[in-house]
Length: 167
Image: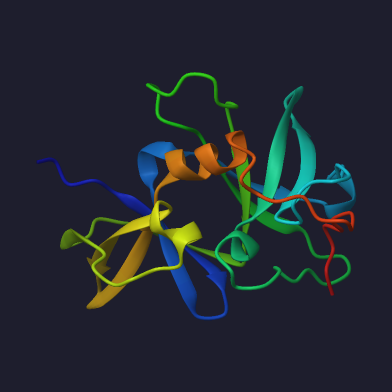
């Protein structure tokens, strides 16, 4: 089996996750006022942003994982990792910009194994494996399941409109 590379990001506080590098398109710095909120959606979906003439969803990854909202100070730009689904996935949007706290870089894990611990039902498909790097286990986000979550509209609508700048 070929060893897969991962992009390590900080989602919230000390929480880090690994993103499979073959799903990472690019990293964006987004001006919060350029995110167009869409009323009636789950607050995890901050809205859309125009990237090279195409609209892509902007998602608060911290909130999706149950860690609260990402904080953005006035004048601060959002850091987002743009993910793409597997090439075998049909019917999904081409990209999803996941807002994170910070970027930590690419790594090749010593080994990867399945997560044996019980997770909240919403997280079971998203976090199935853990990569070990620098003596630490880092949960691997499964991008295709994140796209499934958005596609299936399992993100429940909220009554409030999402505000991309949370203080």
